[in-house]
Picture 1: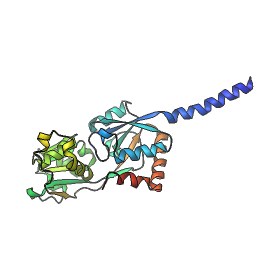
Picture 2 (picture 1 turned 120 degrees about the vertical axis):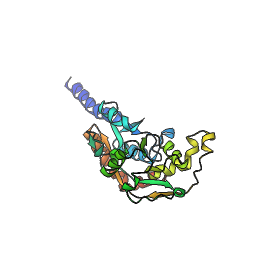
Picture 3 (picture 1 turned 90 degrees about the vertical axis):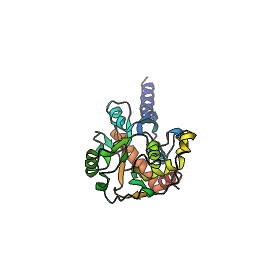
Picture 4 (picture 1 turned 45 degrees about the vertical axis):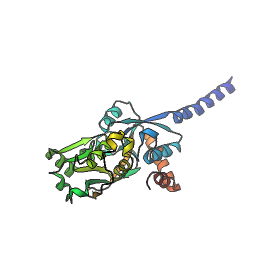
Length: 251
């Protein structure tokens, strides 16, 4: 009898951690972030980095695409286990990972409009179209400019943001350079042939470097899974896999 009880207890001890590691995490991520996240193909280099880092500790992850404004709401409501792309400036109370990716935002304009933008202050009198929650992530000077600028606007759909710049329906695109390049090269995938044919993405643009690099993290409810992610992230960086995953999408 004792032998049977010992065997049962050993089985339970083995089963419990396996169950924990087998659980699929649900991660909330923002809409329209290729090449970081590509919803149509469930791919992107940030997505791949997260999956590979978690996989090393036996975790799997399902990505839930959300408008940026919904991310903190769903996280607080327990509808997702973790969220990306985010950092402490979001105000979300969570267990934040190490930096797993950095975005480089620019103020992008059509060269034909000949706009001079040497600082955030130079945006104050221009029609600025930014990604959703840019006022939260791009610092106090940008937030002050946005609040004082009646021509400032934020939208979640960055394919539409790119289209509006090329169509001269806004003066300034504010967002990550890689995202802008991706949509510039793939705009026909996101709009009807009739609309896409009217948008000249061959127009020359100017990247005004008025923003510092922004480091982002993954916010987890579980401290232990955050630690697992950090360990996996260090591993894929040391092995060279991290850089290889980025190279697939960034030519």
